[in-house]
Length: 430
Image (cartoon, rainbow, N blue to C red; front, side):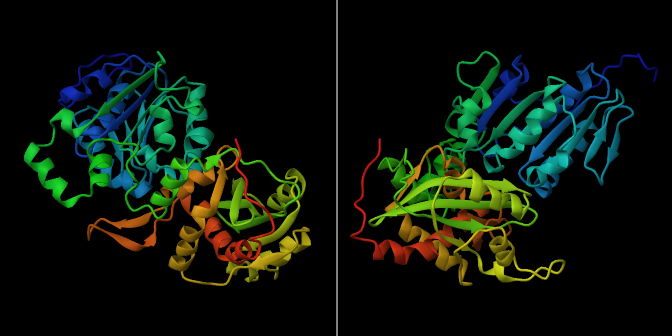
């Protein structure tokens, strides 16, 4: 085939009518909330193929990203190979989940669970599937910059999981520029009751086995339904309805207690709390990824103005490291982080129960604790796809760090909240 020879390629894809407006869009950004089994992944894979085949930029790069790399392989790889198989000269790389097209364009699958591996790449177009399950930092820190110099496009698609980053995109969140009333944004919601892609009798049968919240979330694309399997869904919803997620200023006359989840190859999360009577005030939250312990200590000492009471750390902080023969507790103490309290090793379920007991006593600063609040809302049990039931253990994803740190806070702070019952009066903030 000559370098400039044009050929006609027929892809074995017949778009469902519900997706025609998406395929025909002119906007750079798109957000689609879609019910289960409506064909959103197939539509997005074919949109990527179309974009790659028609892109006039040299060495064009396109990506499909799922929350987990294994999920990308299970969900999208077969579709990508099938719909590109009729393209003359196409090359498939199984080990890298990559398809190279004869015009020099490439489509590759990634997982947001290891988004750092995408640092340094460039993209002309990207689909983020099930974005509600992703760490929002993947988009802000890696994917969006990768689109900048090529002025690439993106599609966010998925089923709602509460009012998280996907909700913000769909409803005009400032972080993303806004999908509502913005001429550069395409947005669409596909509800099962409206698309008619799932038979009425099948929907009726699903209503019998799903809770109302599950049905509203999975089939009717409700952002307000409780997240399925969430540990603190009811408690966080109650805090929102009671206006206890608001502005909570730091009170200099009260000590600040911190609770840490220390990461080695992933995130470190720290909650900052004050006690006023039986009220627990969450005034701040810090999270950093792949950050040295010395840098975390510097932030605690120098960037935060607080007077500290105690620092609560997990039980493994006392384990000595091979290279230094020092524990992280000893390293922090050498970095002038004092009054460290080591949390006893207990079952995760006991810590979750302690957190549930403490949450009704809490008030959260909506801005300073935004990421931590979202972690608590989305922290949920792991789903066993083979047995079709929830496992007893939590799902380990980006929410784990903030949720684990909060457990340590609840396990250590509860006795002090009772002891200070008459010391400081509770007060409300605007």
